[in-house]
Image (cartoon, rainbow, N blue to C red; front, side, top):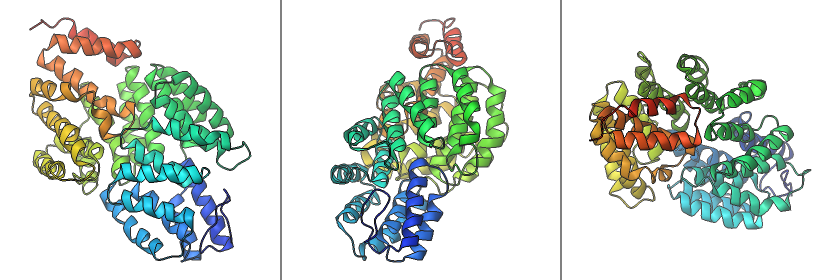
Length: 441
């Protein structure tokens, strides 16, 4: 029987389909080149090729977009009818959970699967992305640490596993080791999204925006080409460095050109634009009619039940484009999810709904209400998923709301907290300078 690049048997494959599948796995794990088309090509060459169906199903499921995720279910159904070996059955069982929104259960299955199949890059990538939107990115470190001693530098995907470990280190706050390992991974695999992305995160979290811009500029030919499907997120990180340096016009210019040009029509991609425009709005920048265009792009890509993280960012665009009725509708969807029994119910109830309600209060000028809503949950926002850098938008909003509410104690304490990790940040210094003259209530 044919095997993949890691030595695992491929049921239903042909030689040329297996070659395409290996290319798809490499593309998927690196986030480099079009994995979706490669999985499709493998399926067309060999319709009974189980892992080709499974690989595409994982890719669609992990977009966390209701439109795309729905397309994964027929692929899973097809895979369930095919001859499957033990390795492939593990994927199908995990996918059955993931396509129903049971992400924690899916990760649990994949972790057991990886004990037996430690070189399975699709399973590693799937588990990492599932954990990412369970708010458990730091588990990537542990998952990679369990298997890296079994890998050799000659095994295909070794640099990717090192990059996974590096990102897990960064999210756990181990910044020096994360940077060292990720720079090394980037040297081994120059087109790796994860390695480049992790170094950008380290620069952001340690308050080194100019170093971050220098890192990105030096490697721009390796991350900014059309072969990189998630380059919009790297452009977003670059915009954050400009914000920290007080270069707001430069950040807006990135929004207008590379971010708009490279974002894709699904929720996780559109969050980048919402997150940048909201920050610029908070800083008092005139963003013109950009919100209207972005809000139209969000239609259908966040449904109040798939992922609170995307609903929050969709609500930002709806609010600032003046479509308050859509946010009321969105809150209705979210409340129905919160009242249900799915895995997402508690996250929507405890975090997602309060954040959107706080954004709504901020939008209509009820800044004290926004502070009251956000303060109790700021340590729970990990539950909506995303990285530390992405979730920082909640603290940005809370700090700005405290300033506008004239709440000196809250604004000042948050400014001091932010300056502790990023003392040179123009944004954080602004928070401090604006909070100090306020009168204590």
